Length: 130
Image (cartoon, rainbow, N blue to C red; front, side, top):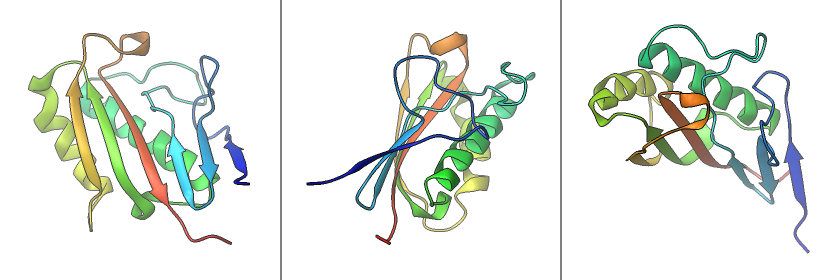
């Protein structure tokens, strides 16, 4: 029987609904979508899509760290954006975090995101079983 572990950290925003920040099953980690909330203040970060994307990536990194992984372990991301015209800016910030062997990725423009943010990113990572 496969054991499922709930991943939680105060270094990323707490879940704002009935879900976990991430789930680890075997050597797979599935993160929930991260939005640009500063975990210290509980507020959406000031600025535009670049600042929001950087905060999302920091939150994603914190959740992965809590699960015993890092960005280098990510094999797939899904990026949800409010406006496809922001793709270039989001892509530039995103590329700073995935500098070698970037993961597979899907990018989808959506009508609305939680708390009316501009970007949300979720990830799947693979780590060695320990």
